[in-house]
Length: 124
Image 1 (cartoon, rainbow, N blue to C red):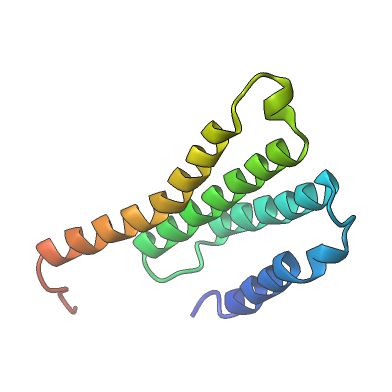
Image 2: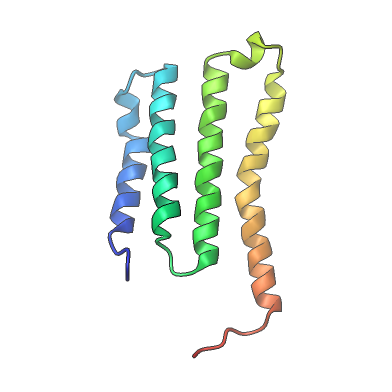
């Protein structure tokens, strides 16, 4: 495969986001911004390398990465109280977060349905 190293890169990102990030200014907005920066770089690299075998897999991965970036942006907004100081209700941010979590799964289900309706895959 063209991007055999991608899984190692992805595991390193996950380890950083899940365990190493707790040591970066714990409990501050800087911690979330650091995670956002890493995730944005990863999203950019995913778009450039397109490491998965099919375009649909690449698109779903890219969609999930964009959703995670947007969730981290919402985390910055919530942790810095920007929403409440500007007169926004935190309920709207919560609804957006729920929608962003549902969106990739909805696209995946629609993709599976579309593939099943198109018939069996043809082998060259």
